[in-house]
Length: 457
Image (cartoon, rainbow, N blue to C red):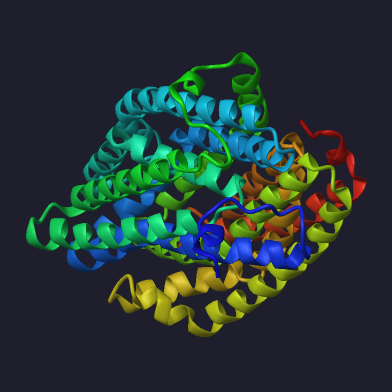
């Protein structure tokens, strides 16, 4: 295969839809797996070399981290949609200006988040009733990550731009390099320098900064597609507003989901350190199980964006069907693997048998929900690629705020006994499963309704 084609922009408006979607998704899926390894390796290292409380500390920091990086989620989504549509429409000037605006917005957002999030970390942890035994570790972990947030931000934005151009291979290569670096630094900082959770946080920000630099170098060399010149590195009202307009709903969606996770995290914390650690293990495996769904969703956004830009709506409908079918088949296979080998996966994180049993029981509750999420992510990706980011946002609001949180606390309340004063622990995962199943049904309905076709930029 021609290396320039493999590591360059890819036109997804020509050829067989499922071929284009699959060959775009596979490198991105591998890349997402590598990215998930960042947090997973952190958990494995601290769980095995520091202890179960350190494992709980790293996991408890997750919802707050996700909440405070929503600005980057918004910029990334808005950039991906605009880049894919302008690339599909072959509008070089608009594409160049959009990418320049993305870089400036990311720099401004990085400074803001670095200051605000670093100061807000401990108060938020206290608000969540984080146990005293882990709150200091949580705080140091979060503060280091936020002080180095620019690396995370620029990698996600720049790799999103590469994917909008149809190049999922370059982002994969750079991420693998940084992931290997992250694993090496994790082991060095924790085992040899005894830095604990602070060490894994420091390793993460160094590795992410390296991947961001590599992405920027790659983009600066893609002069056959767009121009990355200083003249484009300034805010342009039209493009900045469009990035915010398209990306803000996705950022709000992420914020809502993170806030719901924080609310549920408070319920999780009420069950003690053992359940918190089990929840960390489940969420790490969940992160891998969900990757194919997110990968197909992102692929559908890029595929739809390019074809909408080129006015190839016939391709959009065919690709939506084929992409969703591939996502469902992949997710079904992964669900079966989790049910068969879940205990072995949980055993990677800890040597405590009771913790493995507890986390596996919770994982079994969630399993079938991954198939439903394959439908949700794929069809939401189509809507976003067409420029309709509001509908997926409202679906997330309904399933997360109106459905999941009340069900979680309702089950906890109804199952209280003298032996279980806070109710049954399963409420955390039963509520999540129900929200996933209903989310798939609602998303399918709005996709079939077809209003998203009117939103192209």
